[in-house]
Length: 348
Ligand code: SF4
Image (cartoon, rainbow, N blue to C red):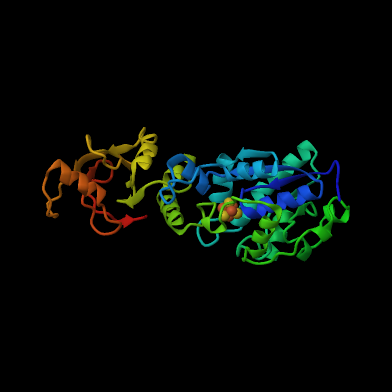
């Protein structure tokens, strides 16, 4: 079946499901434009900026662009960071999932943007790679219906991988796409999708277990909650970037420090030194430590540790900051913090 002149927008994360959905539309002769929304919380973005210490040999790429190249589908990257943070992450109408992931509001936000583009540029409908029952928060039947409704896409949102177990959409009713060629995938298993990928010759797609977004991550959520408790909603995308990097220690209501874990994190943190305090041991490959307040004094050789006062000992101290327990480096701050502070909470 070929549908000349029918044009659809697909939300493309670069994962297997959205890639398959786009390919299913292509197979039906639908002209596809992929939209990839950059939220500022994409794990792949961090790896591109800082490196992936778990897999140093992995090439850094935008998976949505890679998927588009495989399918020969154009993909537009749309930066939504500025509005996404206050409207979705900080004030989700539908609440958070297991971490700080406002998945329902996130889908609504992206689909509203997609609808706007659909109307402006004369596309016929929008599709996604969502699979019924795959995710506990946003991919159950009631939230999927609510998302479609609140995005203003009633009848115009097609989910090709689960279409046969969902009510027929306008594209199916009007014959723009053939419902019999769509799928009835339900649940968390990816077996069917992997079989389809084989069948369609799709290779080199990201593994589903990898996770594409920081917001459901429990470590990230702990750091974000801590930031919101101490700063309220007066946070910006730079603060979000810093949450993805280094080890974070809360020293007091006003003081938090971030310690680089390796060279590339140090290099990244370096860009954020302006307007913040920092600690750096010259002539050694020490971690760069950013502080929210500038320390008046930094004591690198605390008496309660059985180490010498040599430069090498200072270096090793910095590298051996434990994730919990006493901080072997003392800092004194001015402002409302008047004494040397112990570590109150190791956040990651
Ligand atoms: S995991 Fe992240 S990107 Fe995906 S729907 Fe949830 S909040 Fe949005």
